[in-house]
Image (cartoon, rainbow, N blue to C red; front, side):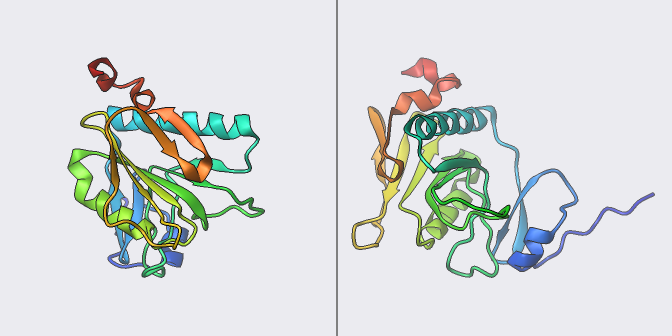
Amino acid sequence: MSAVPKIPARMSVAEFLAWNPPSPLLWQLVDGEPQAMAPASRTHGAIQNELGRLIANHLSERGSPCAVVTAPGVIPRIQSEANVRIPDLAVACSGYDLEESALSDPVLVIEILSPSNEAETRVNVWAYTTIPSVKEILIVTTAAIGAELLRRNADGSWPDRPVAIEAGELTLESINFRVALAALYRTTRLASRQ
């Protein structure tokens, strides 16, 4: 009988990035503690896939050097030695020569908000504001068609709260992207409720 590997109670970012977790779950490092992430719901996964596809097509059509990455690691500036957060999507616009374990300079970070993990997601969103390269953070909801957008101000500060988007067009200035908000939900159960 083989023993199940023990999950470390605390880790540094370097230890976390070199770690071979004992399960196929997705993990993030929060204040030095590895945390398993639950599998995405069908609606969550459908929105993630559709938005990722729409952004990738947009970037490709423009010949942009930017790339959308699914579930990348990002390291907040605050407590950077003890945090690797995993957003649903991110866009980075710089090239790279070596394989990165975490995106070093995302310009856009996207979280898909499920009711079961709202508190954790909102903590992650504010951690993303400490990454100097991030210009926008998009939060897409799964309970209803809607989103929230945080956009860095010209002076580098962040607004106190995100702008709610409940209908119409979603505009992401960081990648010059516009799409009907409802398009994100095309393959979900919410598409018929428009």
